[in-house]
Length: 546
Image (tube, rainbow, N blue to C red; front, side, top):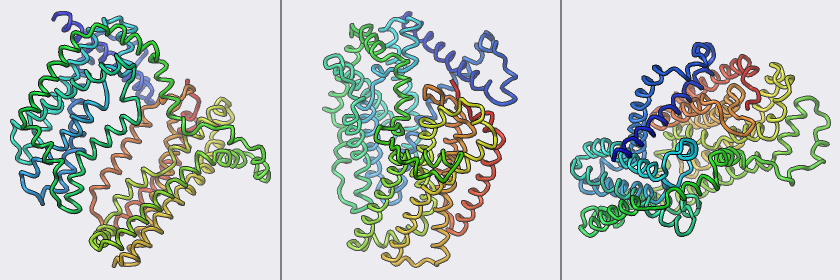
C-alpha cells in the first residue's frame, strides 16, 4: 500500500514538474515580459514547490472544467431542445439514455488508458524507471478517481435542473466509472491475445462512435420529426434498474479489478508498446500525419505548368506556380465542399417539395439562421489546409534564406496568397448564396429583398474573414518546426478563441441587417489589424524553427 501511495505522489510530482517547465518555456517566449524570467527559473526550488501546488490544483480544476463542458455539450444542450415538450418521465429516459450510450458504450470501448502511448508514460517508465505494474495500477486508480470526481458534480447538477433524484444520478455515475474499468480489461485482454489496439483501427473506433451517438440521440431525432415511441431509450432506461444488468456489470467490475491487479505482464506490455513505437516515433508520426493531406505526389509534378506563367515574374510567378502545382490538394477540397453543399441543398429542396411540414420549417428557420452560418463558414474554410501546404511544400525551404524574410517580401507574399485564398473561399460561399436563393424561391420565403441581400453579403464577408484569419495566424505566429511539429501555443489559443466566438454566435438572436453590419465591421477591423500585425511582427516571427 505504501508503494502505491509513494508511486502516486511521484507520478503527481513528475506531471506537475513537466507542466511547470512547459509553462516557463512558453512564458519566456512572450515578447517583453518573457525576458523577466531567466533561464535559472527552471531550477528555482521554492518557486517550483509553490507552483507545483498551484498546478496540482489547476489540474483538478481542469478535470472539472473538461467534464463540465463535455456534459454541457452532449447532455444539456440536446435536452434543451425538447425540455418544454415532454413529460418528466420521458426526460428521465433521455437523460439516462445519453449518459449510458456516450459514457458506457463509447467511453469504455472507444479508448484505453493503459495501451495509449503518451509522453508522460514514456518518461515515467523508460526514463524514470518506475515499475511498470505500479505505474499501471496507479494510472488506473487515478483515471477512476478523475472520472468519479469529475463527472459526479455535473451529473448531479444537470440532474437537479431536470428534477432527477440525486440517488439516481449517483447510480448512473457509478455505472459509468465501473464500465470504464471493464473497458480497460477488454482492451488489455484483446491486445494480449491478438496484439491489436482496437481504438487504433478506424473502422472499429468509427463504428463504436457511430453506434453510440445513434443510440444516444436517435430517440431525440425521432421525437423532433415524428414523435413516435422510443424503444431504444426505454430499453436503456430500464436496464439501469434491471437486477440482471446490475449483477452482470458489478460482476464484470470485480473481474476487471482482479484481472488488472493480477496481470503479470505489465513490464513486457509497456516494453513492447514503447519499444515498437517510441515516444519520439509517436511525435514524428503525429507531426507527419498533420501534413499528410498536403504532401506532393509524383503526379503533381508537371514540367509544362511553368510555361503557363511565363508572363509573370518574381513572387507572383512563385505563388502562381505553387497554386498550380498544388491543384490536387487545394482545389480538390473546394470541389468536395461544393459537391457536398450542392447535395445538401438538393436534399432539402426535394424533401421540402414532398413534405409540407419541412417546407414550413425552412420558411420559419432560414431567415433567422444567419448566426449558424458563422460556424459553418469557419468549418468549411480551406485557409488552414492551404497554409499547411504552403509551409510543407514551399516555405519550409525558402525560410532558410534571409531575403525571403524581409518585410517587403513578406507583405507581397501575404497579399498574393490572401487574394488567392479569398478567391477559393468566395467560390464556396457563392454556392451557398445561390442555394439559399433557390431554396427561398421554392419554399416561398417571404422576406424583404434587402434582408436576403444582407444575408448573402454576410456569408461572403465571413468567407473573407476566415481567409484572413488563417493566413494572419500563419504569418504572425508561424507555429511549425523543421520536424513538422507545432511549437507556438498562441496559435492554438487564438484559434480556440475564434472557435469559441463562432460557437457563441450560435446562441445569438439578431436580425439579418444588424448581424450583417456586425460581421462587416468585424471583417474590416480584422483585416486592418491583421495587416498591421503582419507588417509589425511577421519579419521577426515568420522564420524557420527547430
